[in-house]
Length: 330
Image (cartoon, rainbow, N blue to C red; front, side, top):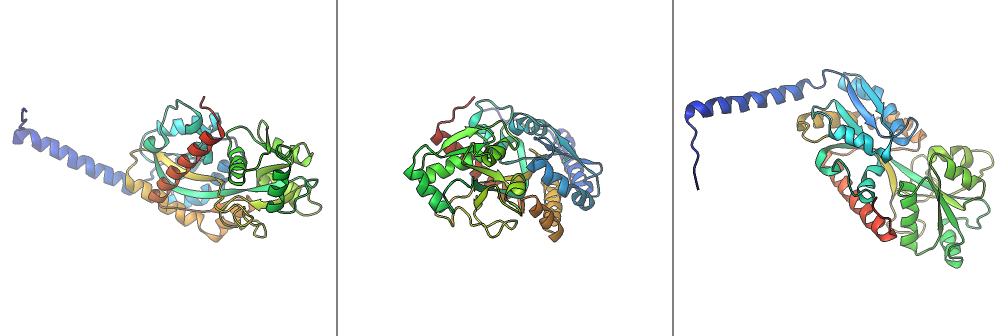
């Protein structure tokens, strides 16, 4: 083994550079932000992530003292936006608003230009968006237990619509099938409200859909669909009269969409902490909770460490479910 020894005259400049670099990083974190912060959304305007960010952006801008710019980069189920942020400078000025789809994609695509856990830094969860299980009025089931009994009595006869293979609503239905040992037919649609329209028309018997997409058909007046349960572990504040699937005979069921904030890996921890503190302050106000609730969102913030653990669990759950139902990687 050859030992290397550096003379004092050489080591002093190196140490000085390290010290100066440390001070510079600390000053950067203390002064952050000094310019507008961009939040990249991987879906078109009007989706859950877009709505969440745009609701929170004005108050977050006030808390940080700089404008928040929302940039929509739709495509590839959010992967285009995720790649964009993963490759951005680690300075805290480009952030990602990921959704549950980001923890599904790695199990469906053999090659991604990024690794969610390696190339991005968790900041906080922001909101959870439970789905509502609804059935067409012609389905003779008034609750989830009756629906399960009906499906077991008529294997393969009942059908459900989704917004596409591998989407969160699709996996929510498949999880129900696995946990209750029922056989119901999957009818995928291209996206948007097509599956809800198909359910209203009686083309499919049931769907798992977001509350905003269902408001026109289960709201006041004569409901055109019958709501049976929400998919979250706890009852939703926007529809507290609806039981959870767990309460309805499917113990342990908990699948929802969600929105959070990620930064590029290696963003200074002080900057991550500053963004996290601003998000926690903004999202947990009564005003923001009410605004979220009107959109079928439940405000929910975490520490960066809690969010990292949450993402890890979500990735593993989706990996196991996708393997179990036989979906193949592209």
